[in-house]
Image (tube, rainbow, N blue to C red):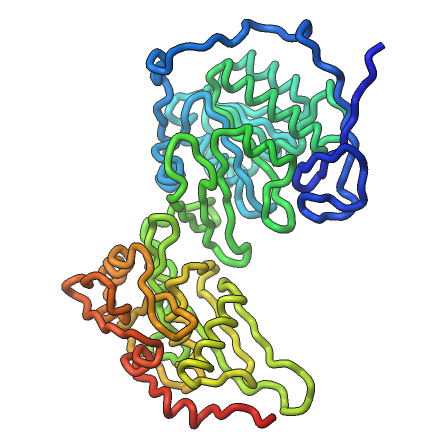
Length: 466
């Protein structure tokens, strides 16, 4: 009798190990290695015709054209729509709106006469019907089946012959021929592999919904991301209406597009003009406020940054000053504070500093370095920045201003929304005709152009006595 081999895999990241260990060597998580038993595979057990080599020129590309989903923001990210026979993995935090987004997509496709099947592995058909009524997404060609057995899902697909299949979620589907509970590494891998093979053989456009871990990564084995053609990340702050759709992996198009949605009572609404969404409630003439023209992928976005500087703990108390940032990288904010201190003489070390990217946006663009420095100085001095001013540059550790990519594209969007001046590095390209370029080589020069006197701020904020 052939001996059955076993291995261990991490339930968080999928890293394989020959023996059990308390800590995963891949992600560092504790007590996440589970045993997987795999039966031996011999050449006699293989079925189906053997793959034969062929000239690449004879490999036809007909039928692989993307078909629109009916939602413009989804089609933007996918480069035109879903490709027949492709497998897409949609990941996101619980409650962010993954099921709502896919239900709206299925309703649009079914409304065009394309048969769609929704596998509800975590809900009953009645629950799906209630959501569909609320979203007004009931269509004649939209079918639903509640099952957690991958063989039942395959049987339903073979019976119904849908063009589009959605499985919500892949972690809840299990394969009876595979050991382990639903959601385990072995089960997720087996179920996803079976559904991917079904998609290729039957030319069924398949979308798998995946959960994410507490760190924001897709749960399950890492091989799951390599198995699919496209990985979509759907996220956003649950306390804000903004939702963002990205494609970290896409075999049929670019991975630099960004889709924006707004969560409403009637479902997800596409956001065609993101600038008005972020700046609609902006209060002008407020100290500690500036607008940064950033780029997410290839899409320009104008986001308001705000800062608040308040007196910190009393000297000698032993309590460190508070540093808080929302939507901004805390490490980058610390670097900007150090540059302000060393290169411009704005010493905010003993003060509590709070910064936020308004509207639930997350700004990781290096071009936000200069706006962040200006907004911190504005908040410290209590001096508002000019109303129709934007700033965009990366800060070097020597206090010099450096150019960032796509600057002309950023400033064009700012000019469209009514901004009339921009502080940019000397090497920046020409600004639009309706905008004045205020070129500065250093942070101190940029502060002077913005109406902030570094010498006066040094007198306002002396360093703490040692």
